[in-house]
Image (cartoon, rainbow, N blue to C red; front, side, top):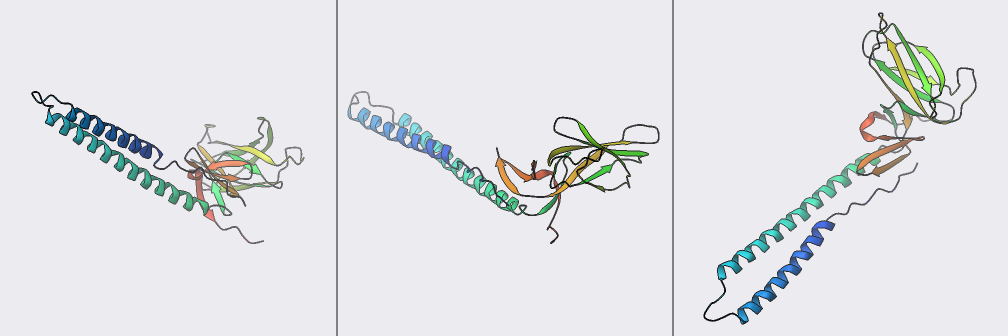
Length: 221
């Protein structure tokens, strides 16, 4: 079991930089204001309203930066909570909606469903090169059906462990194609955060957490 390092968020980085810039600009403004007041023409004094307006604008921008910083902190806390919840998947057995699946130790547990009344259903297992290695006729109960592949091709030869794809072909009595879904059952070995998307690794197949349809503890041997 392995948990991949999760990308650390750059919480508050932008807000901190903006806040530092605002502080520097504000200090420069005050220095300029003091200098202007020291050298103003007594017969034509500088407009105080303009100075007040600029001070108010600086204050509003500073408050906006502080608010953005707080929002970034809240979003980071929410993301950390989401990651913590997802870590619980590691080591668990899950059902995943994915036509890609791993063959592990010469075995793969697949499941499928067919929308509508099927007259014929077959599973086609394809390798990463696009070659069909196994075709088998199966039945459809109208719910979720399962099929365990023993890792052998159509000639009875055992194929290598790795990544494969299952295609479900279902037709009704008139020969029209029916909608299908397929997935596999496996144990989660890794969790990673890829560009903000939580991804589980099962064998050699990465799957988004959103594709998990059920979770259960593995059966003790």
